[in-house]
Image (cartoon, rainbow, N blue to C red):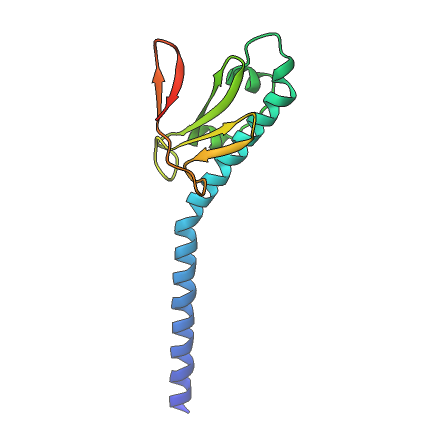
Length: 144
């Protein structure tokens, strides 16, 4: 009877270790997955808002205009993790650059092309890593 009891205890300990390892692995990867989905959703919302409202606006469409008119609503956490910028006049692309508060670190870049609704950059499968610089003289973003 003691032998059976030890087998049961050992089985329980092994199961707890396996479950713990799985939960640790999932919890370690989840912030990255969530960050990828967070920025992809935000960029799609920005592109949709521009197509819906921005194309008929008489003024230059900027991120501030989209946010101030509530054409786009970004979660507080998304604003902490990412900065967003529209490129072109009229805009044809939106970029997101991660801040130091983002779980994967700063300077991760994702973009969406308004004409194709195609995402590229960090976290997009089959996409190259994008680098973003600001050309201060022309006040526009440059990808490398």
